Length: 173
Image 1 (cartoon, rainbow, N blue to C red):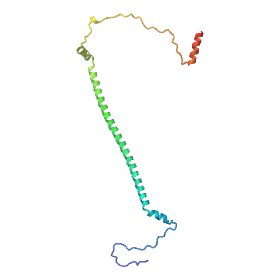
Image 2 (image 1 turned 90 degrees about the horizontal axis):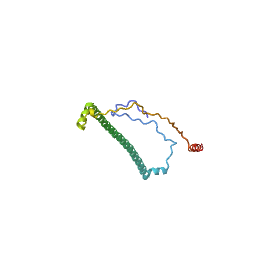
Image 3 (image 1 turned 180 degrees about the vertical axis):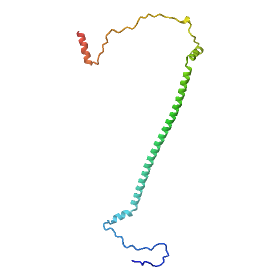
Image 4 (image 1 turned 135 degrees about the vertical axis):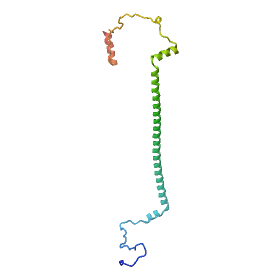
């Protein structure tokens, strides 16, 4: 349908609607639905079952996803906890090492000969030796070490039968 080019002033803001020049055709190869298929679609029980199955499927996927996320969060919490424990153990180790170094320094300061002698006199009641308590011994300058003249016989890993044959040969000789 052809419209004239100008029909006068148009008061509305929407443009004119044109009729389509073609009509959509139906696909001739499309299968026609049988009456049985129509009944299946119209059966309310089948629709409810499908909805129920889809809902169960959705809920099961959500539960699986939640359990996976929960496992990941739990694993991360265990990692964080073990990391904190490791850090506290490192701090404890550092303090113990500092104390150990301080004790070593204190021991080195107190372990000089004058301090040991003074503590032996005061705490244990010890005294220095007098000349009357010293005894001198003369030892001859002879060497008391003797060399081993005997022959050492090393047996190799002989089997049971070889030992028996050696014993018999010694007995015969």
